[in-house]
Image 1: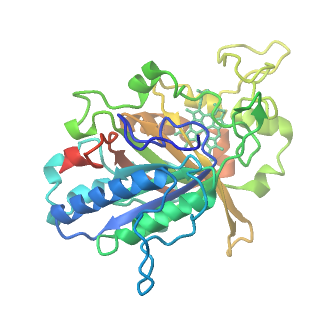
Image 2 (image 1 turned 90 degrees about the horizontal axis):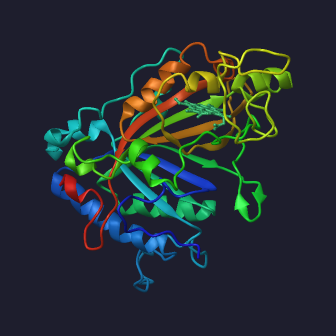
Image 3 (image 1 turned 120 degrees about the vertical axis):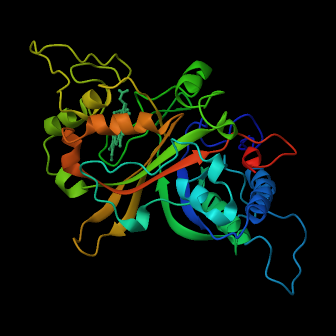
Length: 366
Ligand code: HEM
């Protein structure tokens, strides 16, 4: 079975494990009324259910005298574990024509400026986002292309980013994927199979936000450039001290196994310990947790520097944006990883709860 269910308590693409490709798009809303926007989400609901079933957006036979309703490049391809996740940004609620001002949760606001940010307006914000994940990049792209196309006159494209993850397999199970610095990324992550963890960290519970957000979550998006050339000139020991983990095994420094406990207060006694400037050490200085679900990207060459334009499309889900903000602030200026990365893009979206049959995406909002 390569289909993920569209209908359910939560949207797909959040607790869904092991995504291989992502096509993420941030849209500007040009709809002129709440009614127009609501109709768009109703249409997208119908189309998303078809797409995640491995079908085209419209089953009717094409009229040869008209452009096809579905663009067609997914004909013959299966569902490929396609997931579609929809969210809305703070700016959508400030658009007076839509009359949604009173529905805005107070915590839904642009992420603050962080010390080392070098944001490029080209990759910032958005009124609506759609995250399409699939094991086949063409299936993910097809979904976004058709959803955007059916939103003509109501949404325009603001920015997008494609990304990928590759998995080592063990006993037919996907292992933790490696990022472009070759380190396993996701070892210390929230366990999506634990409903307790997901309730505590990811899913908004009653009275924690506006009612329409119950069972939804917040998505923080950061487009983070990784300076591969600088990294590749760094000694392996320095690379490992940057994260506080061994590269090949993913184990905490001084340990053997990827999933051994991270002990942060161990004093040097011959073996290697986790430095207090390492990424993991600093990420663990605050109590907050979040679900990271990032992808690597490689977008050719930066024409100004001649270096690779590659990095991480960092995506994290949390029930309150402050979880991301507190961790990012803890990484602050001291994270050794800062020497090798630059944050270029940023956005925050409120992701709706899941959809029950007969209802539609964002129904509680309208
Ligand atoms: C852990 C890489 C950005 C938060 C890790 C690990 C790696 C890594 C290799 C260790 C393995 C793991 O537990 O997943 C990166 C890279 C980044 C980046 C390459 C940028 C290009 C961020 C950002 C945040 C963040 C922006 C949040 C603001 C965390 C957290 C952990 C972690 C919370 C887990 C700590 C633990 O529970 O052990 N990261 N990261 N990372 N990172 Fe990042």
